[in-house]
Image (cartoon, rainbow, N blue to C red; front, side, top):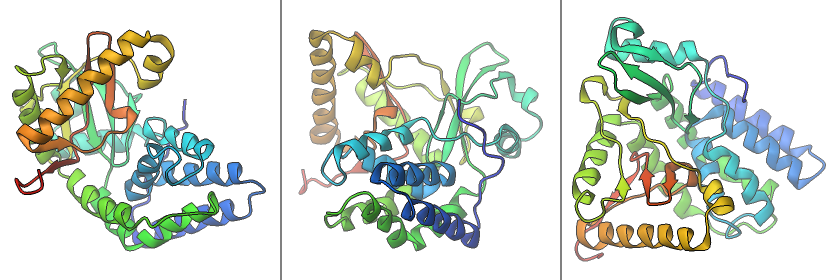
Length: 296
């Protein structure tokens, strides 16, 4: 289990200093592999746009980074250091008002997963429903703006682990757009509800957790708890027929969203999927993309 971070550094000076220290440690490493490990450690601790960059790199295979280095970055999809539980609980109480026990019969202090701008905890409502509570890290909007001001320094991390870096201006622009969108959990709730409603009849095997609006704010989403296997488990344990079936489900539903709904889930990193042999659970709708007719 990852060691908890006590507090998240969110000030521009503090984040610039943290990034600089990470670059320095990576720069004096004796191997590319060790440099990558230092960079990944820094990204995981800083969260925000820094970690989002690492997550985006983790799904590029060998398009940007050497394959063995891109594999290391997959650690950032769900295994970054969690933030101190007290900080997370403080956000919940500030957003919902009152004390934790006023809203939840139980709240697991150990997170299920850690993302770039928040982490998720399993909980139970007083009415008995098993839920997952997605909580945004404190002062994350401030931290993201600091990261975006240093976006070129973030990209410079790549030169330490690969000698041939292509033009990544598109990645920079995508990070700028996505990170500001993802801090609005109200909009994410709306996107979850949109896709769940639109897909339930056409693609009932695509499962999207329902939200509990009473316990949702701009910085918190409380949603139905759903279980499934990880992408890695599917690769290792599912049969070829089962994997082909799931792949076809993903393919068909994606193109339905694109050509018919004209809106897609736009964050396809492995940690946002839970798989079952008869379907899959789609998570994290912080990043979606709407398309105009002329583009379609």
